[in-house]
Length: 463
Ligand code: ARG
Image 1: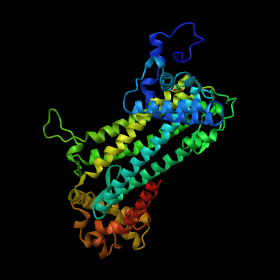
Image 2: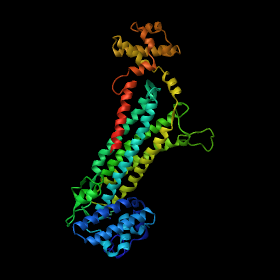
Image 3: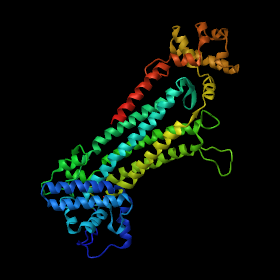
Image 4: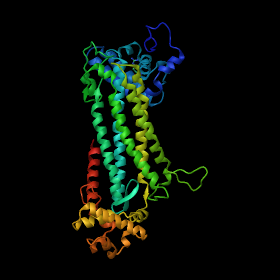
């Protein structure tokens, strides 16, 4: 079999070394090797079944491909950059193993539909892997929420003390985000899950293919319905990257809180030593580098989304070589997501929450002022007026350098005769227990959230 060098029969000259390097993708698309082989096996089997090639040839091809897979797994396979990409690397090795029959594999196929298939297969696995990572992290959040169902903390708005909440409630907020991320992934999977092989270079193929067979064999739900679309759009990559960017944004917010909360100023958490680093100059340091890197890598994930959107925006139909640029950024994003989910789960699981400190801070900063206003509202006062009186009360207490809990009923009643003695019973506990709306921080509401979160896990792991 003639040496397979990206079909250059038409060219009168070889590529220069620089051009070869410029156009080659093997350094990164070798990650598609297993998908490429699996896809080729299904294609060859189908060609044999449809009598497009001889069954004996099909069998030889399949056996050769399986051998190549073994060579890959044992690290023996030699990737060659002069063979441009993963498709040609594999086909060329197949030629070495089985001889001339290898040339029949590319019957009724183009690298254009072949690469679209490989990337879709990769994306399907990526969705499964990231989804599993989300479920694991979600589990850690639920575990910490259950362990902290009686831990009080100040809830924040504007990074200022706002109203007391259960730590469990705060943690479960992230469960909601992660559940939506999981759902978004499953929804984008529906559009990834389309089998493009059989589109050829762009126009379809003049053979009696059994596309359904190939789709079934490779675990796809549907076959693509327009060959030009199938070889040239990568909107499924945009979508996956967008979903990853949203997920990464959530992971970055968690990271930011861990960074803040582990500072001396907050003192809410102590990160496990295995997740902090020291400083080369300051011996006392326990830096939250893992959380910082997660926050930092978010920039790359966002950048990768912009990259694919920009690559696609000016492309005329159908395949253009620009599309080769879809892979590296995609791989990087998926790698960042899977590794971040993993370390985040470990970090959070090993984090110690400083309950005493959180409780102490829950009582500070007139955090119960809203409850005082709600007290007046319960006595029949319009909320706006109640809000104003509570505000004046805070100003009064601030002047006296007192917390609200240190004021007497007489002092309350100086500001409004509507205050009654039960205002003195307002506490962090009463504040939290009173927030009984669905989704509120009252303990029984938080318990329902935990129950729902566990149901999510059952559904997610059943998939
Ligand atoms: N390496 C190419 C890519 O990633 C494979 C398809 C090449 N097709 C072509 N007509 N040159 O897109």
